[in-house]
Length: 282
Image (cartoon, rainbow, N blue to C red; front, side):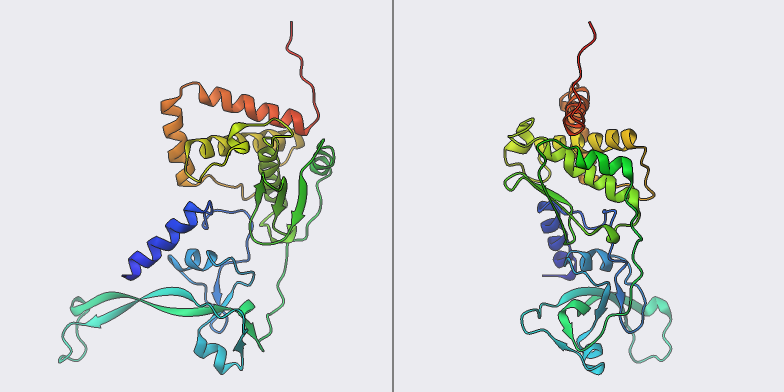
């Protein structure tokens, strides 16, 4: 299997699992080499983000050994990074022109600092999180709420557990992004069978399917409504992946009424979260 095939396979596997590694409003900082302190470039930050490691620091095995570090017994899986190596097509000629050089894609393995014992991580500055009162009131006032947990590197809602999981607050790029992400997952949770019982949430849906894309659009709209309700803006608003956009375009073309229906579902979700009863004007 070529390096290109390895990379593509890993990215597709991630997307099929519902993870878009290059789009999230929280960060463990750009992956950097622990020794050189230089950030990884190109596809490498995306490849390393797929490993869901907490530390932004990575080392080759040689770098780790030189610093006196050792791999943890139960965590020895290496991660791949790529680089371009220029091969001289005319080895008999010194100082060959660049036109005689051929770029070849190569890779080597690195390990996250979390996998290593004997090397201390430098102190990291974290976001000073100050709760926004209007948003906290919304969260606290959610009737029949799901369970809220914090930790890990993924924001998600699990219908089977009726649980919202969020990364730690200090890992977000700004406070507004934390609440926009939380509101997105809260909107998903209103679809649970004990609340509004949206089929897109109650039934199992796979990433990229029409129903999955429809539910994502409802969640995006719901988050937007709740941000407007609480007066929150963010510097780093969660962006829609290209996969979602393509799916939404297909849905809109196939169902001309859906954008109206989606906004209505989002409004019902927000009304549920806010415990707000709306009566149609007579």
